[in-house]
Length: 89
Image (tube, rainbow, N blue to C red; front, side, top):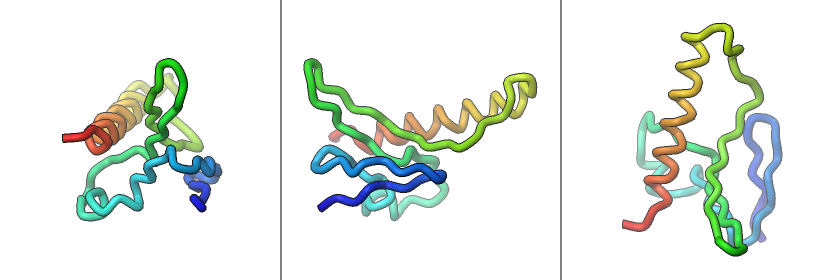
């Protein structure tokens, strides 16, 4: 049975057979310093889709443009890396 994923104080799932837990991926475990989403989730339906999930319990205020821009860039990097890891070669 698949376990729920706990990240940033939140619990996700379980999602039997539809979830790719990045932290348990041997390819990701070999990487050092790579920013990554928490997990990828296959959503069945018409059309099917893949959700990239990043858990954050807080974010900087938009008033602090430099911190907010850095935060958004960090999230963007995680999504790009998550998508790249999840795509077949």
